[in-house]
Image 1 (cartoon, each protein chain N blue to C red):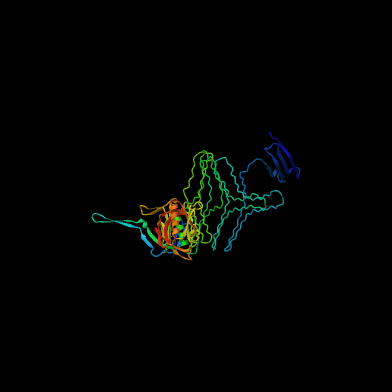
Image 2: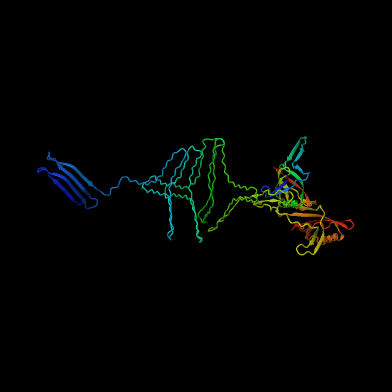
Length: 129
Length: 473
């Protein structure tokens, strides 16, 4: 499997394919229950569902060339809704919420496009389709 | 008073014996002088006497009277050209009726030849002078019916207009092939009700009386195909109310006791299979244009339905090379897509700081390339908001600030190189400088950490870190 970013959703014009993320990727909900207790000790709970939105955190190690592609993608669509097909084949629609997006050159990769490796951590908030 | 003129009298008298006269023939032609008077043209009488009786015996008398100006009671005129053929065969059906207009003129004269074929339906109903119901009708009817027990039934009516204008003469004559199917009806009268109607009706019905599972296929199709059309509508801007309307109305009605579906679809669907050539285009244009000719009335035109389409295809699935799959989009305000080609990188083992950026630099420092771990940060000004229902809304105006920063660390600099860098920082405080990075890319921006500290980590080895904020040129 690969990871695919598509934007702008829904009239997508660009697909960008990335390799699978590193282990340690996160997937968590955004709901937040509020628990209140009355004076008679009755417990009341309120839930902010937040549209059942979830947050994904993905760490990618990319060739320099692919990092340049992802950089161009972010520059073009930082304010657009994005479709993400993750490494499990699940489709998500939301936003890349990472700000700033930081590309770090981690080492040399002779023979790989760009001869260097870069890593970037992407946070994504969206709804599973 | 008209006189009678006897034009001719012939008498033959013969007697058998002396006491008996026998007139055998009398003939007279009598004609009047003035028109309209009685005119006896011929009188003939044969008279013969019998020997037994002395009486005369008239045996024949004939009078022919001719009169002019009398109208007949009934008149009828009819012309009929009837084609009737009947074929009744169990296996072979063949019945042909032809009304062929075929004319040919050989090119033997320099005058313009004319070949014309006309099938004219003309009927005229004269005014009878009194109020009567009157009908006149011209009909060109095509009616075919195929009913038999054979495996295939086929009935077709065609009204084909086919014209072609062509010439081999190199002189560019005008050539105008034209096909017209004109419906024109006019109702003009003083009667209470006036009605004129043009109808172009497509009606097809298929009755399936015997259904075999998986065996019989039924379909009914009406086609109204517009190929090429050039229309011109002229609306005069005067005080007279004028309107021009063109309508293409789809109306469907379904009435079934149990389950009814009435659906109107105006769909534009185009699919192009994945291949080297991709071209999908759908256009639904609304064009309004107000005319101000001859009037000062304010006019406005509004279009409120905007269609945009985007297409992208998975042409390359590559996770190593620079290979974004960029399609096309006509959506208004759509972001500019990434470049499809990778920026050119020219590897070099140094970076260059220079000032100024607009003319030939007067200050310049060249040091070795930075250590691994260099960072490039992209920071955008965006508004992230959650709505009352918990929806995430992200907005950013494309003109809002976008900050790009480089964080670089250098080790192994000589004391002189480090001092030169610090001197450069002091001389260009707050000024736009240039940075040519280790990939040959040119940045213009400012040093955001001019107070960076030198770290003399070893003898004659100096480390230095700074950050740069700018735009890639």
